[in-house]
Length: 255
Image (cartoon, rainbow, N blue to C red; front, side, top):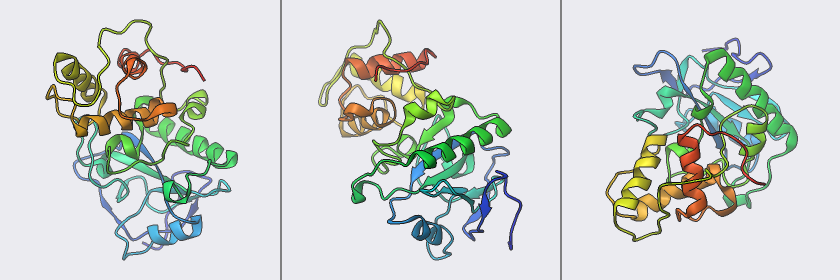
């Protein structure tokens, strides 16, 4: 492919050879947000377009807000790897991937510049409007691959996106009928917690045991919805936020 017309009109195009057809999917119905974890946007762009890397993304948002499209939205980019969400186990086929330049946890997890986040908002707003993608299906890489991935990380401003009409957030429900849980706990309250996580979309087994895998998934939930304390412990606030999301009680939590 020598080039294509960008799906997002304001994007520059740099074609990556790392793509293929979507598998059994006509229309993607998720947007997955990543950080690059690389030292610079130029390095990330080069890697995502390098045939030796076996990775790509539909879009890359540079720190200065410049947007580059590397794979057509109709095609399957190789951005998510192994993961799952609400029965979809081929996340690459189900989604559009957006890499956001940030050196990540190994580089001290710097804040995302304002102009970069404004560009992300414009891009996601355009994609979701054109493709009628539900707000609850704007997800973090860490949501679909808990433990294996942590991006876009604890500094990513999900609240700001929500204020711009993108994604979902929730204040804790006033009343919650699921008890808090902690690692190593066993019982029906843990089953209920795992059922809530699974019902929302996370890949967790319902075992009634608060094992290491459950703690990882709770931590991924917190990275998106309760960033101030992402310790993997399902305290009362975490459980109440989860219940509010499941009930569709979307709103802003306390700052």
